[in-house]
Image (tube, rainbow, N blue to C red; front, side, top):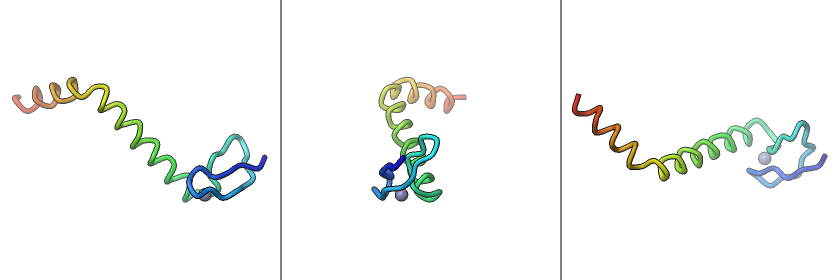
Length: 59
Ligand SMILES: [Zn+2]
């Protein structure tokens, strides 16, 4: 199945639902996903995370 790479936009033959054309692009996509995931997590739990850090500092 011909698909567009989510990183560089190049068309490639996708197997097993792969979304990137190469190992390099896959690495970039994985990093971006993790970054986005962490940002969402941080935004949603900012108070809890800060509280936890403060608590750990006091000990
Ligand atoms: Zn690519």
